[in-house]
Length: 221
Image (tube, rainbow, N blue to C red; front, side):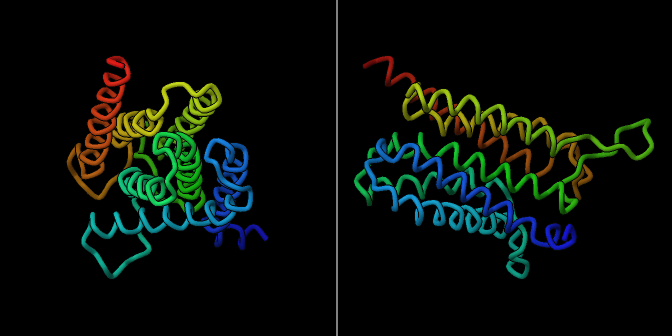
């Protein structure tokens, strides 16, 4: 039983992520002006597009088209906003509302993917100097970040605070956290900085730029 769960952990975790998205969309269906049954295909599509995003980014990152099994969580950070924007425009929904409602779904799904890293034994931390093989808990630290962020996003979504700013807040904070964590994560690169540091810095700067610009526009209004 446990062996089967371990072999299919990613599928099971993505299913959990889809169920979370489903219940979340049902909770805020009135805000999105949609019927309850629409949440079912939307939840499934959200997970599928997310998986395609992280796989596509991994391929573009390494230019290795022979191994489509690789995934990079930065794909979700950079590609999913395009899906949200197109979805909002095609369905004639308010763009800010779509981003605000779907951002926690994005965070929870990415958290599920990182939990799978623990189960599959990848993306582990470097060995802590002076210990007998003990590694930095980089994956656990990232999951803790997701949990804290989900609480913050839930409160802001409920109170409708910082409308339209939730995704830039996620992108900015994710970039900062990943940049810090990458320094303790094992990598094939022998240098202190590697490619994930670059993507993390881009995510932080892009998120900060969008957040600051939108905040300024709201202040001028």
